[in-house]
Image: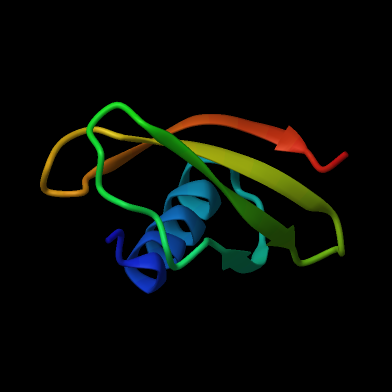
Length: 74
């Protein structure tokens, strides 16, 4: 399983560093199986109240992930 807390912290840190956004929280599912090449989504809550969806891809069997897309919540 993906470590959702670790993934949430990494997304928050990387988005704040890369884009200057202030992130209030990140919510990822806790039941994501580690399957290389598969994707899953997390909800990014910005400090101003805006929500976005982060799509992440699992890169390897060590559960390393990469941000594929960040889009406004529908």
